[in-house]
Image (tube, rainbow, N blue to C red; front, side, top):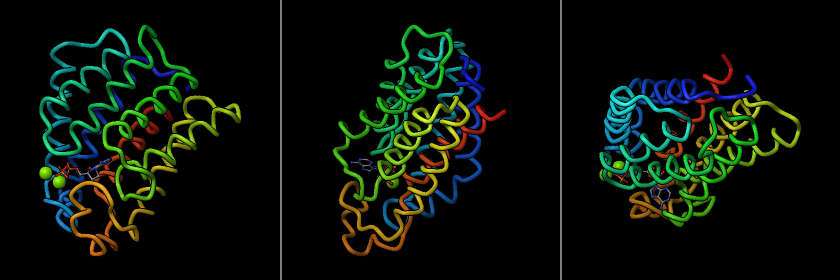
Length: 211
Ligand code: ADP
Ligand code: MG
Ligand code: MG
């Protein structure tokens, strides 16, 4: 596809919620190894609430949809991931304010804004074993796909593949941010839960854009 509509954004968030719910226990297991075993529950609960909000008040634009998800995640999800994903969706919303459909350039602008929001909020750098390790390669791959003339599907497919690789590449890292950092060297050998849910987010958007 060469653009995402409001319905596409809602479909992607719906798919993200479904994938997180299917993988709720997996995300809990990842977080139990290096955190407090709540990431799957946090995300499943937050996304279910976001989908209820979208159903209760259908969004008029992609920015509206992204903003409803942001405010719900900030309100309903405690811990690190609620404010971080909330900030990402809020910045994404602002980046595409006033647009009825999102072209490839809009999607890249939205992703850059979302990633920058996570970094400014959480102060993690690439290599710190956080969701930034999935977001940053995803954004870079999206930009490269756009520069190569890719449409929305190509941009999101590239981002999704890079997010997946980025999440897998967190396994050997030692955490320097978030709860996992309390474990020091013992955090190595486990995949970061937030990077893993980020890969699910990108897979959901890529899947909707690829249809
Ligand atoms: P909590 O750690 O508060 O229980 P979650 O378990 O829901 O919250 O989320 C944990 C995830 O949040 C981590 O796997 C990591 O990806 C992400 N995270 C934690 N701190 C930061 C940070 N400062 N910057 C970016 N991401 C972070
Ligand atoms: Mg946790
Ligand atoms: Mg927690």
